[in-house]
Image 1 (spheres, rainbow, N blue to C red):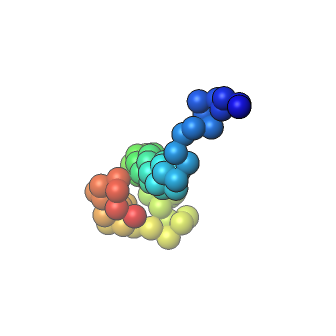
Image 2 (image 1 turned 120 degrees about the vertical axis):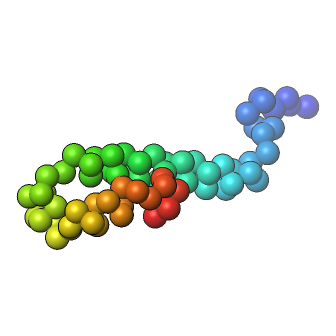
Length: 67
């Protein structure tokens, strides 16, 4: 008779759900970071990538959970 270590007794069926949650949290943090960065862009930066001030306002006004 062998005794399994505790980490082998964990229910691994929920790993998919935890992975999805982790990915969602990562995406939300990244969107928040990118939108914060956009607020520091200049007119020249926006022009270089083909965005207008109204595009910037629309994008930075979105909540972090909206793509």
